[in-house]
Picture 1 (cartoon, rainbow over the protein chains, first blue to last red):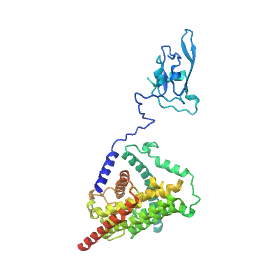
Picture 2 (cartoon, rainbow over the protein chains, first blue to last red):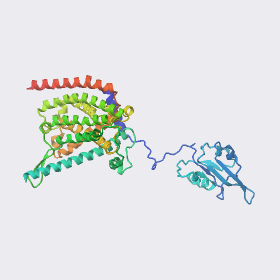
Picture 3 (cartoon, rainbow over the protein chains, first blue to last red):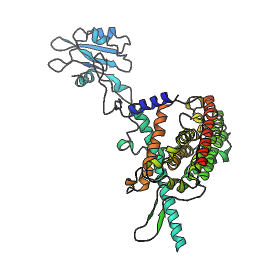
Picture 4 (cartoon, helix red, strand yellow):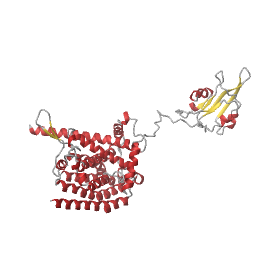
Length: 137
Length: 339
C-alpha cells in the first residue's frame, strides 16, 4: 500500500514540474488540420471579381440547400452571379460546393471563429465571400 | 500604563495574526488551484491579474454578491450558526501556536513574545477547539433539511470521531517526550538543529498525525463528507453566498492550523534547522516549514483517489488506532526505562 502511494506521489510531482500543455486560446491558437473545412471563400479573377460563373452546380449539390444564386450576364456576355447567397446558419460545411465547382471559384477556408449576435450577418454574399479570401492565403 | 501597553500589544498581535491567517487562507485557495493545475499538466487560474494573483479577491467579491438562500425546511438558527462555528474554531486554534521567538522593540525594553496566548494546556486547547469545529459541519449538514446534507454530516460525524481517537493518541507520544502541554516548551525542547526535532523520535506519530489530520479536515483521500460524485457536495449542499464562503474559509483555515500544529509538534516550530542559521528570524522558518507541509497537503490531494466509506472506517479503527496505541506503548516504555 505504501509503495504505490509513493510511486503516485513521485508521478504527480514529476507532472507538477513539467510544462503545461494547455493552449491558451485567445492568445494561442490551434492551427486547423490540412483537410479542415471552415468558412467558404471566393477566388477572385484578375479584375478582382469573383470567378464564379453562376452555373448553379453548388446550389444543386448542396445537401442542406443553403445556396441561392441569381444569374446575370455582363456586357461581354459572360455569366456572373447577380446575387450569391450562402446561408451559413444552415451550412453543414460538407465541402460539396468546393468539389462541384467547375471553375474553382468557391473554396472551403480555414477560418473557424465567427460570432454574430443576429442571424442576418451570417448570410454570406459575394462581397463577404471575396473578403474571406484574406484569411486564407 | 503597563496595563495599557499589554492591551495594545495583544490587540496588535491579534489583528496581525488574523490578517495574515485570512490572507494565507485566500492565497492557499489560489495555490491549491495552481498546484493541482500543474499536477494535471495545465495552468491554474491565470487570467485575473498577473499569474492569477487577484483570483482570491475575485472569488471573494463573487461570493459576496451571490444570493443568500436559506432553505424553507431548514432549521434556521442552526443553519445560520453552523458556518460561524466552523470559522471561529478554524481561526481560534491559531491563538496558541507559537510562530516565532520573542524580540525586543528597539529603543525600549519591551519584550514581545510572538504568540497570542501562551497557554500551559495549549495542546489540550487545540484538540478541544478542533473537535468543536466539527459541530459546524455536523450541524450545518443536519440542519439544512436535505438528504445529501444529512448523509454528509453523518459521515463527517462518524469519520471525525474515529480519527480523533488516533489523532489524540499519536500526540500523547510527543507530550510524554516533552513532559509539557505548553507549545512553547515543546518548541524550546526541539531547539539546536534539525536532529533534535520530534519527528526523529516520533516518526510513526508524525505519519499518524498527518493521516488523521487529513481525515479531520475532510481532505482527500478522506473527503467523504463532501464526496462530490455521491453526495453532490455533502454537508454544504444548501449553503450559498457568504455562508458557503465561511465554510470554505474554515476548511482552509483549519488546514493551515493543522499544518501549524504539525510543524510545532514535530518539525521544531520556529527553530532553525541548523544552529548556524539562527540569524534568520523564527517567523520565516515557521512559515517555510508550514509552506512545505501545505504543499504536501495539496500534492497528496492531486495524487490520491477518495477512499470508500467502509475502507475509511476499517483503516481508522483497525490500522491507525492499534498503530497509535503501539507507538504510545513503545514511547512510554522507552521513556520510563531511560529514567
